[in-house]
Length: 277
Picture (cartoon, rainbow, N blue to C red):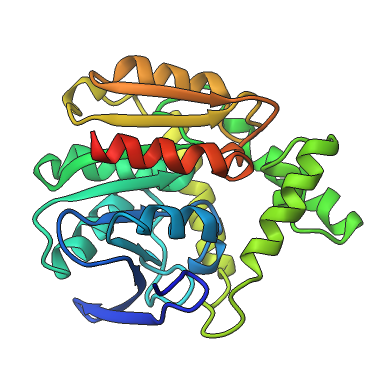
């Protein structure tokens, strides 16, 4: 089977903008569409997650508007990011999908479910919380601090943002980045400065937005996070799960924002069971 490390990058043009995407697994049935995190491009997906889900499902991951190898500019609000995701899904001619949203992608997935509920069958929301969550004003300072530490240590900021700085977390981080490096060719373009700043504005605005009525999202949802998330406080994930009518919460121990990557060996079977239920 084709794996994440060698599946080709494709493009589809939507209203003059070229969207980059990759597919895995056997087409047919309801595909799982992946929505990625702040500053992420296609190559920032953990291959163990993509390959694991693709073992039983048709998987599609894409760079949303202005991200990585997709054209145009990133909008600075979550609702437009959701609208762009809806346009991408409809351009591929799917009437219904499952959504897998991580971090910022989880917020975008909620926008898709609120704007086009008929399009969504099930959702996996990892390392994310609801719009209107408290403390989001801290995000620029958290990110800025991590970038400063990363610069001094000559490491990717996600070493400090995604994983705890203990022995187990440091090992998980090294393993995660080794997996990201498995794909050697046909890689996505890096995130631009415009995209980074627009995403940060969208996240901050989302935190200050009035809370959404999540009771209208009636599809089954699997919510997952680490027990000590620096970027999206873990209690926000728990709050979101309580407010969703049909949600299950998994919290992984001794982990943070990247808990689903650190615990991928347990997380992937949980996702497969959830999607098959």
